[in-house]
Image (cartoon, rainbow, N blue to C red):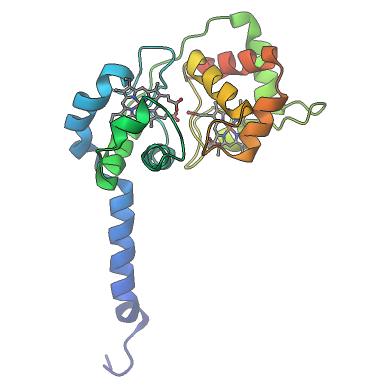
Length: 205
Ligand code: HEC
Ligand code: HEC
């Protein structure tokens, strides 16, 4: 190759290398988080991220991109939580990326439905929204099966009590890093719709 006219690959090689380095740091290494997860997180979120207490979110099978964003937001204080903020304060970004990769790679167990009678209403709201009160369908972002995608969190099998807590925080503007769309949805849902959609999400495998 003529050294005066390096081909596109060699010209961009340093940038490509940097890009891949950044991408791999962002992706995290699940194996490196096993010890941290067992020591710092398992008591509340379960060994494999299937939290046993209904008020604690399940992390198993959650989107890694979403998990990492939330962990960073607890660390910066953008998302507040008396419980989570002190726990992540001593962890660095690499730890957080590794933990996100670890929980994303775990298998979620089925959720627990408390009131099956609410499932039809919850399903209708999830798949169609409520045109009268201006609530968009949830599946456009969280996917039909509730698995989420990237920054859109998995909601399938999530604990009902945790979901209800989050809707309260969104509605009162207290989920500091929450998007406008989630705040608007939480404000507009009736108490019955809120409960129903939380039960429906928990019922998704
Ligand atoms: C003492 C119990 C407790 C411990 C220990 C704990 N958590 Fe949490 N975690 C919670 C609670 C409660 C929430 C919900 C807080 C909120 O409303 O923002 C939460 C929320 C989260 C969320 C947000 C989930 C979502 O769906 O948005 C992530 C991610 C998380 N924890 C990861 C971790 C990791 C990683 C560790 C260990 C380094 C850990 N937690 C340790 C109780 C705990
Ligand atoms: C336009 C996209 C969009 C739509 C539509 C949408 N969501 Fe969300 N949702 C998000 C995003 C992004 C987040 C995470 C960021 C945040 O907190 O706002 C989120 C977060 C959530 C969370 C919190 C998850 C957790 O683990 O803490 C729940 C629960 C939720 N959405 C339920 C719903 C329901 C129910 C509907 C339909 C009535 C819905 N969403 C419609 C984008 C959307």
